Image: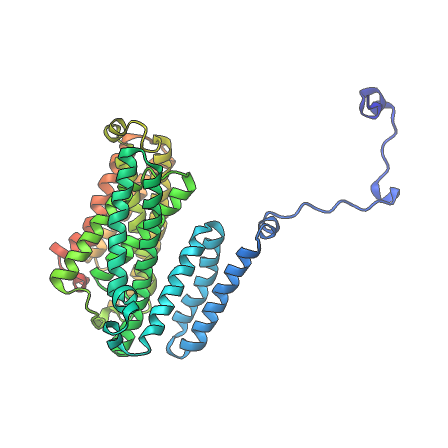
Length: 405
């Protein structure tokens, strides 16, 4: 028995002398959370961060003369953002590395001559922008089939195959966009631009962001059972993309219209489509939540608690980025048209969309709403999103009519 710890001994014992009087050192203060977080970073984390810094430095040294202050700032800001993303989500590192290697290989194979797209085997069948995006489309379609097979047959192998193919599609789509960016500059300095300027390019962007958001939550929750619905949404988008390319020749690179010749486009459009991707994923989680699909699948879908959490987090991320995009769009409008807000059709429906998801989050956070109401709301929100994104371009006109079909 340890008498020193008994009540009697404790009462009778004299008070302990201060540590300084005993000649011992004061215990060190507990490390801060930030210090602990940095201490947990391993070799791979720092190597990844240094690779990003090196890549940004090389890009600046090579293309700095063609970049203005805003583009330089965008390049610099992306380094800590991508580093933090790769530290928090390790599979993203391999994705980023694979997309970078394939993009650089495709750019190098061109050797400054656009005609090589039809002469070099790897460009013609793998790495030119059109073939890379075609591979992306094929991988997304096959991944959708694999996820549905896994859902129907309860096959873990089919679901893993769908996951691998979704990653491969994201890599090829990212490669296609980067190579397309380079191809636009080969057409001429006055034509070169970041490939997010028309419906063809932004549908690729939407498919990529939606896929990456889904893959993040797939890893976060350790379940691939939502993949069938998430990839179905992406496959519908890809089908529209292919129709648009084949019937309208939208894959052809065109010069930017004057309204799009702005640095704002480089940040406004990606932020917008991260928002759209989050809203689309939330809608698919809402469909999976409904009692009908849950009964039909009989335990093959994630639990309703997981689906509610995916809905909430996907909408929260989408809403944050859509809010940023709306603010950036107002700044862009002030520069291009002299007014922050003109109640153009696109602006009006963007406001309706923002209010819709603001109300959804308000009900979820302050009214503790749950269940079918929020699931149906998320599904209806996708219809509003679709009209704000595409329907306005199809049926209405205004200052944003350059994005019409």
